Length: 318
Image (cartoon, rainbow, N blue to C red):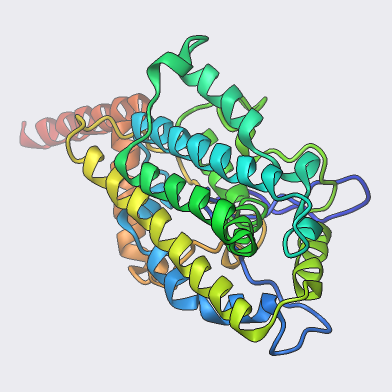
């Protein structure tokens, strides 16, 4: 897993985690009340969060077992999702129940995703990519909300952007290692927030802005319900990608040994489930052995060992 860097002035917090599809990591906050929107969202989406982190696509991703074609299709889904979300945010940037959360310079992802798609598909990528069925459902809901109930945009913005600043940073590192992407960021520009110097501080600001919105209890409950709906849309995309993966020739690219580099606190990853480590040491040892045997150098060493053992056996047999 990726490293976690201590934050300082002018530093981007590099957390071990989203989702893209990534979601909020629910850091502990000070001076919050049970009725605050951030707390209601935290408590009200726990079940959806658990379901999302346990989809097969996400579990495989975190293990560094990624099909490049699926990663590309996931980037396509994100592009259409954020294009719709940011279009509706622009439309409602002056709406009193959303305006305080309008941070286009700091948060908008459409341009970064366009750069990633050009890297993967070439200059004519717009003529190549298309929305999947699951993505279409998500996009249609975002447009419906933006045009009929702008206050619910809070749920979609919170679910996506806060996750990108948290869990998305781990997925970036896993993807770079597993897909052997350039360390300079090509293919994962989506995860880079050039105008946010401290992810932790920005998330605190964003939550405080949410809590200051003038919303009645009914509207807060509707926002929580919409956030759960957003989780469902994302899970539909994950499931769709998983089904597509079953039809693709097995060209999984393992991220090497290991994906997690031993730095930072992996528990902060919002997609990290405790049961991923429940297999114990023997399971991990088997995974290491298999990975070594897949590597050309490992195969050479194994062949050499077999040859030596055969020679020794032949000598004793004489």
